[in-house]
Image (cartoon, rainbow, N blue to C red; front, side, top):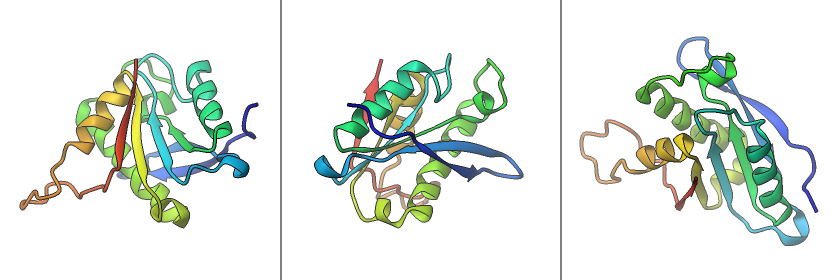
Length: 148
């Protein structure tokens, strides 16, 4: 059984850039009580068959799942942006999801992705919470999900 259709919300990046995120809401009867944010791989955006089936399949099992496009995919370009821009986008998705959906802020947050999306998720999760310079804010991530 697949979950219902996802709903979208915008994520503002630096300047006037905006990317689209989709939230697949977990089935109430089996609600897990956590959220997973997934970034896509370098070759296909969030509406690829893999990302859609993975997101909707996990939602059918009770997990809320958010997918999003990186800026290059949002604009229909083939070549991925550089690492710092991808990381900044992922951080913006996490921060926007928590601010726009208060229920997400109250429960464990997992991040990850397919291939490149998983690599970027692991890089933003690796910022130590005890970083005294605070070059990046601690995102309070409960775990990583790496696909492919």
